[in-house]
Amino acid sequence: MAEDSPKYNPTFEDEVKSAVVGEKNIIYNYFYYREDVRSKSVESEETAASEKLPCPYRGLFHFGPNDAEVFFGRQVFVEKLFQATQNRNFIPVLGASGSGKCSVVLAGLVPKLEQEGNWKFTHFRPSSGNDPFYVLAEVLVPLYRSDLDSIDRMTQAGKLAKSLSEGELSLAKVFSNIQRQHPNHKVLLIADHFEELYTQYSDLKFRRSFLDCLLASVQYSNSGASSSNVLVATMRADFLANALSYRPFADMLQNADIKLGAMSREELTEVIEKPAKKLGVSFEAGLVERILNDVEDEPGNLPLLEFALTELWKKRTGKQLTHDAYEAIGQVKGALADYANDKYKNLTAEEKEQARHIFIQLVRPGEGTEDTRRRANRSELGEENWNLITRKDGLADSRLVVTGRNDTGQDTVEVVHEALIQNWGQLRQWMTTDRDFRSWQERLRIAMHQWEDVKRDEEALLRGVLLAEAEDWQQKRQEELSEGERDFIQLSLAWRDRLLQEEEERRQRELEQERKARRAAYSTAGVALVSAAIVGVLGVISNTLRIKAELRDSAAVVKTQLEHTRVDGLVKAIETTGKSRSFWNQLWLKDVPNSVQSALLSAIQIATEDIRVALFCL
Image 1 (cartoon, helix red, strand yellow):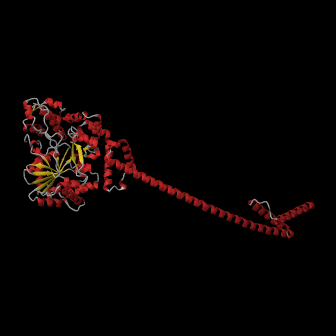
Image 2 (image 1 turned 30 degrees about the horizontal axis):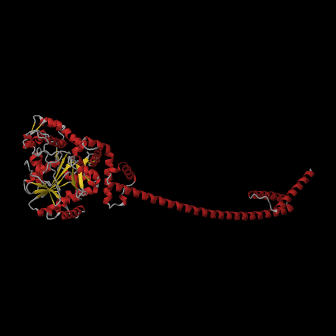
């Protein structure tokens, strides 16, 4: 590596991000962050001379294509990857977070393939935009339409994305077109941080549609024949279960993935010593062993090691790295936390609250996995928070976050590395406190994206328990919601209120209809009752007349029988009297017809006379 002008320089051609590889080749859509770290102390002429030395360590950033000269410790694995490209067209690289997956591909495999001289490179991350189809299309278009300007490229990328997502065009045909443009070259498509397909996109159907599109063009073959295009996908191992849940992807992974494990002690020694040695810088006796013991065997500790070495480089004495400097930075496990705490404590109270809001938005709470970093856009964070990120000596200058742009041209920001999430105690404490809020907010964003996907259909607005939960969180944390999120909740509340009003109006109409129905029923019942009463009265009158007639007839019979057969007449009189009393008592009447009274009186008189005669005879 040259001391004053490193080979690598990122270039932006017509706003399309690309990185130079070697002398002429480039990796499309890949921006490589490179920062030369200088020593801040000058204690001697020798130290002053060494001031110009660029830092050979990468801190929390991955190694890129032009860091090959200082990339050590993974030569065996790089060779394994290289051999895989000769007879495979799909190479999934799985490893723990912080195991160096990106570095081994970009600083190891890519430079080695570049030496062959017949490779084209293109690179994408699923989270680079809102649509993985567009992100993929964006990195492929320059390979077959290099004549287009930036606007035409975006237009072409949009058309290609639509055709791929709707199944009108297969990815295999796109690669065939690229092959015709570059008949003597192979294409290495690098899908970096592939786990973001699962953290960024919640729609299962959409996610599987993208996987089908991508994997259909790179079906794994055991034939051993080389392919004109190769897909290398780096993915965190703790997302393997997500990948295996979809059978086509699971079938592709069978015996195909290459797992990146922990480095051996010998490999870690190379990582520590050799980059410094290339620049003539040495370690104080025993320091390398001390650092090795602190690193342990965890693959995720590599970012912490690189960061500690970067901080150690800043405090070197001349061309030597010392124990005192190592103590001062907090050693391997404390260097990152100490650095972050140092930057944080220099903020004002108001800025510290802003930093809390920013950082919790840059972490996606894990569900069965570790928390992962999240890319947030400027509008989500607000202008005041964005200023804290981008100002001089802000969070970006402090290398705690990195900024960029997505496929829609929005400014974005993300945590520099997930090691910060896992090892900075302050951030872990914030996430413990705010986990419920952030988990809910991620669910809200999923619902909001689904609503937008269906053209803001009211039926996709929040309702029921989800809306009640959103209303509660909005009251508690309104300032931490984006304008879009607040609008989504307000529209849902307005829609709910309108439905409630419509329901109340419907209920009132139904009550009025019920009242009208009851009044009509009462009116009908009254008419029926009066009618029944009239009929009843008429029936009673008719029956009364009939009985009266019968009684008059019986009285006449009594009178006749008394004149001829007294006993029969007397019996008939008693019978008639019983009927007369029963009838008139039922009708509460006191007047008995005269004819009946006359017949009965005659019978009584006759009976009385007969009794007197009988007694006289005795």
